[in-house]
Length: 333
Ligand SMILES: NC(=O)c1ccc[n+]([C@@H]2O[C@H](COP(=O)([O-])OP(=O)(O)OC[C@H]3O[C@@H](n4cnc5c(N)ncnc54)[C@H](O)[C@@H]3O)[C@@H](O)[C@H]2O)c1
Image (cartoon, rainbow, N blue to C red):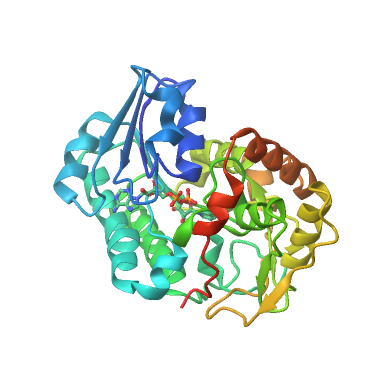
């Protein structure tokens, strides 16, 4: 099914990945509705669309089932990205469950009621927990370490159960750690790459929790949203889950090394603190299914991606020292 020309909904569309998906979809679709409650999302992320008559921004909550039923009356395909993040889950597991699990069930209910053409649930590699076997293919056991991972897994189960029981055309995509322009560097939502870049730019040591040998499969955001779009157009994906990732394992130590080199700060060494509770030790995605089913490959490798990201970060005119003052080093607890 071609998505071009359809009416689409993007929940969490003001967030990091969601806003890039809106960029991609708005170029080829007549109508894009963004639903976001702006807890971590920003209007600024959608600034290119504020005067775009094809993009409608609705401030609302996925916990509001009635609102979802109203909105899905006028759409063909829903991309569901709204989320409360992992770090929120450590302190506030209930809100994580309500938004990530119940919010997804709400959207399944609304999607079926209005018989939308397709529901695409954007899950997370966090559903796997640490790798038991590598590369981690889609049949790797789901063994989430955190309430966040568990709530994302619940969302997956609801999405796929709605296909099995009611025939809703639904699917699950599982991006691995994504980075790039607009990724969060502030407070609770901040991500490792922006944090390291900011600290190096301020001549401060990046802080690594644990020994830095933990790995992630870092994927550049334009690759991630391209994968989400390609999966959503693949009819064979109905009732299935697929990884979206570069397929390269990168340790946090190597990440610090790459960023320090790109910024000419190799003399600044990381400092190490106690490991974080529930931290995944190893992620290395299997990427064969996405390639075989819909011809997808993530193109941007970590060196290139970090270079592009740093170029973007520097062009924003941020007050680095001011940002660093707001940056709290905390170990999830
Ligand atoms: N960033 C990553 O590395 C990564 C990796 C794998 C999967 N994912 C998944 O991708 C999706 C997007 O993640 P992101 O990194 O862009 O996060 P994000 O925090 O930037 O975006 C989430 C968006 O959801 C909105 N939101 C939160 N609660 C809401 C609610 N109750 N109702 C409506 N909107 C609400 C936020 O305001 C925000 O705009 C999530 O589903 C996440 O699980 C992200």
